[in-house]
Length: 336
Image (tube, rainbow, N blue to C red; front, top):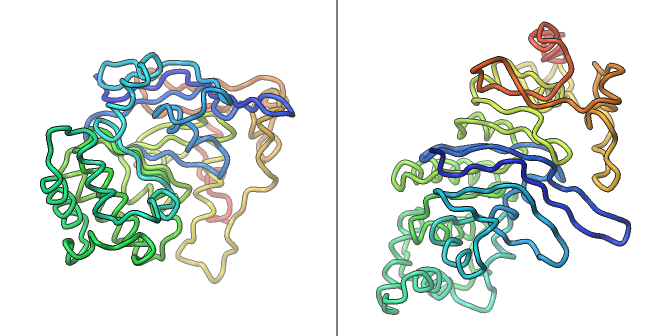
């Protein structure tokens, strides 16, 4: 039984201009100890999907339907108090920008200790600070006792991100959601954070959902991959299959934009056009107007996510299998 099972998840927002369908029928599973990567352009619904799962969206401005089952419990049907017990304890989230997630007027130690005592009412203040120092050590922050007295602005971006990871892991969650935790970091610090997450996965045996738009990070860290476009899942499979035999033209574009060995002789590929408005999404395939292989059926009929029998590699595309498996179509710029 999967640790997390998301089925036909829909999330929409009411605006003055109409209803924005930010997440439209998303489904995936995460097993214990697995790292699932969710990739796609900015605005494709990656973060909103996770915020919907965590029930962190305003009920007044958004509407979420579908099924989200975590460790046998329906999260969408859980009470507010029930979700408060799950957040930070069973499911923890590392947000994209630690500077806006950490409280600037409280010391690091107080914030880490609060995360520990909130889910362990019997824990003393001294025990909570001991746990905070222990977690700073686990994420590779030197002199942890001294760092507990720091304010967020007294730490570097990499340090703050490590603090966020320490806070997320304080209560040994079963599922860790990392929302682009390396986006604002330099390459060296990014590599250190990825190595840290890989190490913590082994030590804490947590399942991880890693949200990113960086396919290189996906190749390095993830077991399975979900590719999202305009609120929908367009491809899903193992990281090996996705990189070896991508099936959707959008995935081809993402992989084609990666720097290759012959960087000086090749221009980096870019996907033409812009994503469609989720306020008025087009009929048919939402990627059709940007696709070099568009057919008449793509403009009128929405493709269904599917694959061959017993094949975990799924794709939502009208192209025939022989066209999707043609390497010259998959990597036109790389192989030209």
